[in-house]
Amino acid sequence: MKILKVRPDSLAFRLTAAATLWIGVVLLAAAFGLTALFRNAVEASFDTNLDVILDSLIASAEVVDDDELVMIRSLGETRFQRAYSGWYWQITALKARDTPLVKAAKPYRSPSLWDSVLLSPVDEGTSFDDTNLSRVDMLGPVDHTIRVLERRLILPETNQYYSFIVAG
Image (cartoon, rainbow, N blue to C red; front, side, top):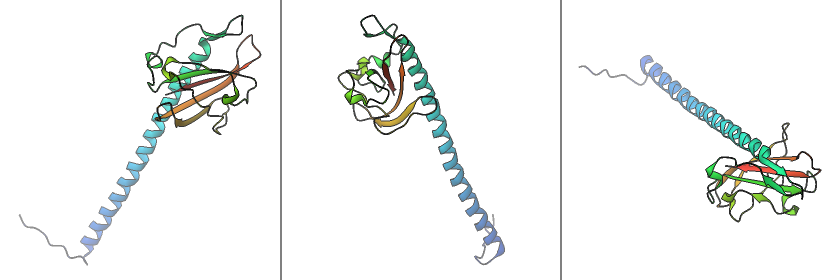
Protein backbone atom coordinates (compact mmCIF):
# COMPACT_ATOMS: atom_id res chain seq x y z
CA MET A 1 0.00 0.00 0.00
CA LYS A 2 1.35 3.33 -1.04
CA ILE A 3 0.99 6.33 1.30
CA LEU A 4 0.38 9.62 -0.44
CA LYS A 5 2.28 12.62 0.74
CA VAL A 6 0.22 15.77 0.51
CA ARG A 7 1.96 19.09 0.54
CA PRO A 8 0.48 21.77 2.85
CA ASP A 9 0.25 24.25 -0.01
CA SER A 10 -1.68 21.91 -2.30
CA LEU A 11 -5.36 22.26 -3.16
CA ALA A 12 -6.12 18.72 -1.89
CA PHE A 13 -4.63 19.50 1.53
CA ARG A 14 -6.54 22.77 1.84
CA LEU A 15 -9.87 21.19 0.83
CA THR A 16 -9.36 18.27 3.23
CA ALA A 17 -8.42 20.64 6.08
CA ALA A 18 -11.42 22.90 5.40
CA ALA A 19 -13.80 19.92 5.27
CA THR A 20 -12.37 18.52 8.52
CA LEU A 21 -12.75 21.90 10.22
CA TRP A 22 -16.37 22.28 9.05
CA ILE A 23 -17.25 18.76 10.15
CA GLY A 24 -15.79 19.49 13.60
CA VAL A 25 -17.78 22.75 13.91
CA VAL A 26 -21.01 21.07 12.79
CA LEU A 27 -20.51 18.15 15.21
CA LEU A 28 -19.89 20.54 18.13
CA ALA A 29 -22.97 22.61 17.25
CA ALA A 30 -25.07 19.45 16.96
CA ALA A 31 -23.80 18.19 20.32
CA PHE A 32 -24.68 21.45 22.09
CA GLY A 33 -28.04 21.70 20.32
CA LEU A 34 -29.08 18.12 21.06
CA THR A 35 -27.98 18.47 24.69
CA ALA A 36 -30.10 21.60 25.11
CA LEU A 37 -33.11 19.96 23.45
CA PHE A 38 -32.80 16.88 25.66
CA ARG A 39 -32.44 18.96 28.83
CA ASN A 40 -35.52 21.03 27.93
CA ALA A 41 -37.56 17.89 27.20
CA VAL A 42 -36.55 16.26 30.50
CA GLU A 43 -37.33 19.44 32.49
CA ALA A 44 -40.72 19.80 30.79
CA SER A 45 -41.55 16.16 31.54
CA PHE A 46 -40.47 16.54 35.18
CA ASP A 47 -42.54 19.74 35.54
CA THR A 48 -45.56 17.97 34.05
CA ASN A 49 -45.15 15.14 36.58
CA LEU A 50 -44.87 17.62 39.47
CA ASP A 51 -47.91 19.51 38.17
CA VAL A 52 -49.97 16.30 38.17
CA ILE A 53 -48.84 15.58 41.75
CA LEU A 54 -49.73 19.16 42.73
CA ASP A 55 -53.23 18.76 41.25
CA SER A 56 -53.62 15.48 43.17
CA LEU A 57 -52.51 17.20 46.38
CA ILE A 58 -55.06 19.98 45.89
CA ALA A 59 -57.81 17.44 45.16
CA SER A 60 -56.89 15.45 48.28
CA ALA A 61 -57.08 18.41 50.68
CA GLU A 62 -60.28 19.29 52.45
CA VAL A 63 -61.20 21.67 55.26
CA VAL A 64 -63.44 20.10 57.92
CA ASP A 65 -65.90 21.78 60.30
CA ASP A 66 -63.39 23.26 62.73
CA ASP A 67 -61.30 24.83 59.91
CA GLU A 68 -58.79 22.02 60.14
CA LEU A 69 -57.13 20.88 56.94
CA VAL A 70 -57.18 17.12 56.36
CA MET A 71 -56.06 14.85 53.56
CA ILE A 72 -59.06 12.79 52.46
CA ARG A 73 -56.85 10.35 50.53
CA SER A 74 -53.18 9.53 50.16
CA LEU A 75 -51.22 10.65 47.12
CA GLY A 76 -50.18 7.04 46.60
CA GLU A 77 -46.47 7.85 46.38
CA THR A 78 -44.19 6.14 48.89
CA ARG A 79 -41.47 8.68 48.12
CA PHE A 80 -43.48 11.23 50.14
CA GLN A 81 -43.34 8.92 53.19
CA ARG A 82 -39.56 8.33 53.41
CA ALA A 83 -37.67 11.03 55.36
CA TYR A 84 -35.60 13.37 53.19
CA SER A 85 -36.30 11.34 50.05
CA GLY A 86 -36.12 14.42 47.83
CA TRP A 87 -39.90 14.34 47.23
CA TYR A 88 -41.95 16.72 49.39
CA TRP A 89 -45.32 18.41 49.66
CA GLN A 90 -46.55 21.14 51.96
CA ILE A 91 -49.85 22.99 52.50
CA THR A 92 -49.94 26.29 54.36
CA ALA A 93 -52.96 28.42 55.34
CA LEU A 94 -52.44 32.08 54.39
CA LYS A 95 -54.12 35.30 55.52
CA ALA A 96 -54.01 36.63 51.95
CA ARG A 97 -52.71 35.41 48.58
CA ASP A 98 -49.46 37.38 48.89
CA THR A 99 -48.70 36.48 52.53
CA PRO A 100 -45.10 35.28 52.89
CA LEU A 101 -44.94 31.71 54.19
CA VAL A 102 -42.69 32.73 57.10
CA LYS A 103 -45.61 34.83 58.44
CA ALA A 104 -48.22 32.11 57.91
CA ALA A 105 -49.52 29.35 60.15
CA LYS A 106 -47.59 26.15 60.73
CA PRO A 107 -47.75 24.10 57.52
CA TYR A 108 -49.29 20.69 56.99
CA ARG A 109 -46.51 18.71 55.33
CA SER A 110 -45.44 15.34 54.00
CA PRO A 111 -43.64 12.91 56.32
CA SER A 112 -40.64 13.12 53.97
CA LEU A 113 -40.01 16.70 55.13
CA TRP A 114 -39.51 15.40 58.68
CA ASP A 115 -38.84 18.58 60.69
CA SER A 116 -38.08 20.89 57.75
CA VAL A 117 -40.21 23.46 55.95
CA LEU A 118 -40.15 24.27 52.24
CA LEU A 119 -39.58 27.83 51.09
CA SER A 120 -42.05 29.40 48.70
CA PRO A 121 -40.95 30.15 45.11
CA VAL A 122 -43.00 33.36 45.34
CA ASP A 123 -41.23 34.42 48.54
CA GLU A 124 -37.93 33.77 46.74
CA GLY A 125 -38.89 36.25 43.99
CA THR A 126 -40.48 33.99 41.36
CA SER A 127 -43.85 35.19 40.08
CA PHE A 128 -46.93 33.19 39.13
CA ASP A 129 -47.45 32.29 35.47
CA ASP A 130 -50.77 32.46 33.60
CA THR A 131 -51.85 29.12 35.13
CA ASN A 132 -51.37 30.47 38.69
CA LEU A 133 -48.23 28.35 39.07
CA SER A 134 -44.82 29.36 40.34
CA ARG A 135 -41.76 27.17 39.77
CA VAL A 136 -38.10 27.44 40.71
CA ASP A 137 -35.03 25.33 41.46
CA MET A 138 -33.77 25.79 45.04
CA LEU A 139 -31.93 24.00 47.81
CA GLY A 140 -34.04 21.48 49.67
CA PRO A 141 -33.96 20.25 53.27
CA VAL A 142 -30.69 18.31 52.87
CA ASP A 143 -29.02 20.89 50.61
CA HIS A 144 -29.81 19.08 47.35
CA THR A 145 -31.24 21.07 44.47
CA ILE A 146 -34.96 20.38 44.08
CA ARG A 147 -37.60 21.66 41.65
CA VAL A 148 -40.39 23.43 43.57
CA LEU A 149 -43.89 24.19 42.24
CA GLU A 150 -46.40 26.32 44.16
CA ARG A 151 -50.02 27.23 43.58
CA ARG A 152 -52.03 29.50 45.88
CA LEU A 153 -55.82 29.27 45.89
CA ILE A 154 -58.99 29.27 47.98
CA LEU A 155 -60.41 25.82 48.75
CA PRO A 156 -64.17 25.29 48.24
CA GLU A 157 -66.41 26.43 51.10
CA THR A 158 -63.65 28.50 52.71
CA ASN A 159 -62.56 32.13 52.51
CA GLN A 160 -58.93 31.40 53.19
CA TYR A 161 -56.02 31.14 50.80
CA TYR A 162 -53.79 28.09 50.91
CA SER A 163 -50.32 27.60 49.51
CA PHE A 164 -49.83 24.17 47.92
CA ILE A 165 -46.20 23.23 47.25
CA VAL A 166 -44.71 20.08 45.75
CA ALA A 167 -41.02 19.47 45.20
CA GLY A 168 -38.88 16.76 43.72
